[in-house]
Length: 266
Image 1 (cartoon, one colour):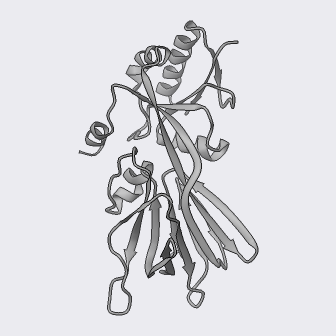
Image 2: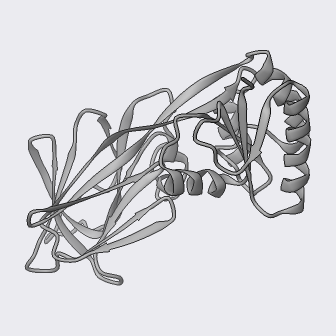
């Protein structure tokens, strides 16, 4: 039975041209190539920007297949290959000249009475209050109460997401070989009335973060993750932790994370 390759692309002309080239190269190597998502594919090739990868996760879950991105978008931080390198990538993959980098998502449990809602993101989980309003929350790490947060919100990033919104907020870039969560405040209050951390907090992956909204102000919560938004009313508490769901990204042996950081951000 032939090994199966799945190709998912956006609608740009350069993406379609790249997809056709990659498809022909893999078929010449004896692979079966399908367009669109295939759960039983050995490899899923995403052609576009980082948004193509994030849509894959939220439309199909965290697939068990290996995933690689070919960047025809803008920043393309998750994308490993440039269009002009596509043929070289096909050869490297067929020869086994690559590594698999596993990335876990971040998960939040939202409790409302007896109901629990679970959301998962790859990059980050942002907790805000009602639009235009400060949110008041008691934040605990593990079993320790840390602070009563007052501000625009709190972001919890994975190492994968440390270079995204977290970085724009002044959070640290985290090497993806580390397993941890980074908590970054968004416009925290720091006055005689309210005292909040104003810098990021880096936590071991096994320590969950508990957030309890102050119902005397508002228990309405807005969650933002990977460009998606969900609204919850009358929230009792939330628990954020590293997810068991994981993404398996193909990384070429010739690539280095910190070189990519330098090329993309400096």
